[in-house]
Image 1 (tube, one colour):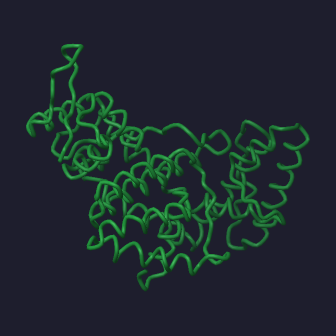
Image 2: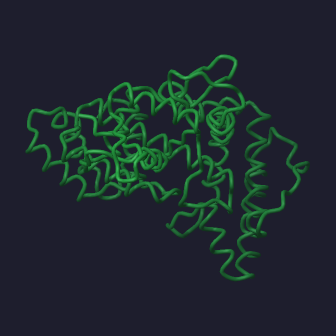
Image 3: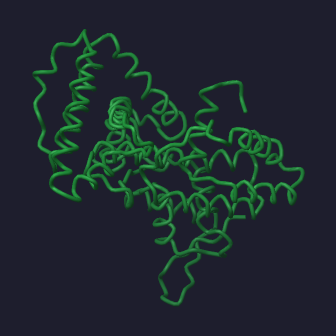
Length: 346
């Protein structure tokens, strides 16, 4: 553990949303005994042991909004443990992939309020590091630009969800779970909407330096509950944008945005900021996608990338194919004649 509360909180956040548990910790300890001189021993085991000291309710548990990536993460993580891919760089790459994947998808899901889906992919398009891009490409229109808008709403969603969870019930809720409850019976929809409106009135009554709440119009939702939630969100967001607390709103989203720009975003000048895949990313992703297979069909590899939140348009796919060809990793021999396979990277 670092002597840094933000770093420690992030570690617990990842541990929670990736659904790590005692079985995963045991697997890590077993690997430690196999790779005794690996950095895993120093970097991971001590933290697992310190995590045990936090058992008993002191460690914060997070509500999982997107719930179909945890199994994928564990499959990749277990493969890396069993194959000896446990260097600091490899572990950092895996966590960077799934941290970005979970948070970026969650930001977009939250912006959909009650109509968001816990499963499936909100597609975000990347460009390959060395290719030229134009503004009409998907990597420009459906990549970082799309995500940045959702990241800007992070703090308002966090506050809105905090308000919605001020109940006597210890079970946490989000927009989707409230929508499901509201949809179970007509009177539930009315009751939940009324409670949200009460919470909004209480919240607004404590904000003395913003006078524009009465001017905020209602946006029609899929239910009375969603309409009430959207109005509460708008009240939260507008009072942050038009008071001295604007900086708090910006600072909250800038932490994740800063991580993205340092790790996953490249400035393409006239084309703006674009999600970016480096050679290092490609080699790492291809290794964990192939597992122990000797080769994988190229189209299947692209689908495996998408299962980890990384989409490529046809032009980027062509650049990636050329990259594999230069590394002599393309195998054109197959039963179908023209199918292309990517060979395993040692």
